[in-house]
View 1 (cartoon, rainbow, N blue to C red):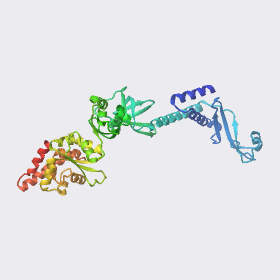
View 2: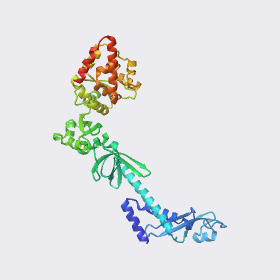
View 3: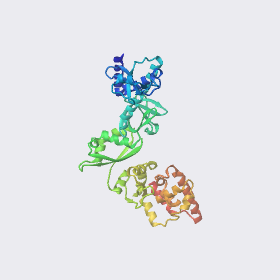
View 4: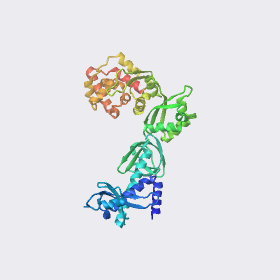
Length: 442
């Protein structure tokens, strides 16, 4: 029986990856709990399993007193001398008790305690195994799908790929092999929870490190990355050696390297730009593929401490610089960590040559439908200080301001109404509005 016990503990420890000592301690604790019915609830009893033979021994700690009033806690001098000749009054001795007989209920209790301890030890082992893997890429197999959240098997653990962290349009089936980025590992009452992501910019960076040897060797360094998962991404790279072209290294011969990464991200378009220490150069490159005429860094930063830049582009490059629904401008802002305000050359020339009718009229802006006080400040900071400025700038320019977002159409329509109403009062349309619109559409 004892040899079988040792074999079982060794086998469980090997299969579950748990230290056998943890199992021995769990078994001792479980047997002690199971023996409460025969030994009572005394806290002076301990059990010990011999690690080599599997023999179970029970010890009871008692205090040496002249007159014994509680035999379970105390021992007389004569009995104490028999155990230890040097025992004196007030000492505590351990006395071995006869082997215990465990009934069916006691054995069931011991089993439950052992199983719980094994589960706790296994959860702790899994947490420690994955705790240091945050920010890395793991491979998993789709086990099941719960409410659009994908549960993956990663070795002996399970991880969750939430719907919000999935690339739009991706579909998963049980048995599919998936690569994902470890977003978070945390303890919960049900064990460690491993959260994965396929939309995080860090996943794109890790793919570059995996697929491009020059990045693995440290010759090329990824400085920054920005993504709108499934659609487009921008990556800034730099070379540590003068004779190595960082963009060419990432693209590969005939685009083979970047195509592998793009396929892994379900066809996501990736712009690779060369990083620069000079903020103006970096901003100009970040707006690629649009050509930039000039970049002016603002002397003052916004209240959140974010630097801002005014970018001037040729008239025929304005739509390209802003991108579809402002995507190119948003990604450039994320990549550089700056607030970017884009203007066309003709728009800038108009502002310089003509007096700004209604310019800076915050009251007129605040009166527009859908414009909050916070949005007024954002519009003024972007150089749109009046409804007339908004109409001159055009819809695309307005949509390129992050704070406006989906409200662009509503704000633009309100500004048009305001301009039309004031034009009627003034006896004619403002000639500068149509010219600006032509510049934007170009």
